[in-house]
Image (tube, rainbow, N blue to C red):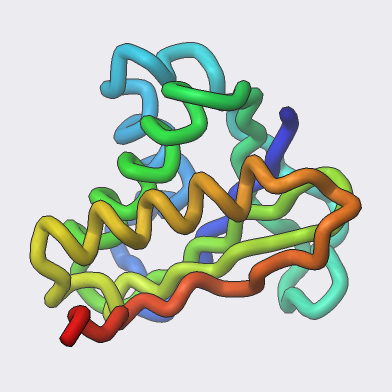
Length: 143
């Protein structure tokens, strides 16, 4: 499965570090994901995006452990970010999931694991199903 990942940094970065490149480096540190992502710069922004060019990552995933490792790594990366970043994971069929770093920072390990499981499920669900939408980044604990 081919997916596109974009990261919008809501903070003006002065060090020149592109958020997508930082995420790519993070993903490449995961043994299961090494070599599965590459950076792509589009000449025109996708619909709804502003700017002249969009920085994106392309990832090749497969069901099972690789998709789960990807989802867990994206959630973990979002938890480490300062400020606010919006990470959008888009499948080739147009389905997408968005995670905002400020919403996941306060999650405990169980909540982060649940978000990663839901992200994996959204990524792996067949295209004929209705997308489940953006995972709720603040799940309520069971009563």
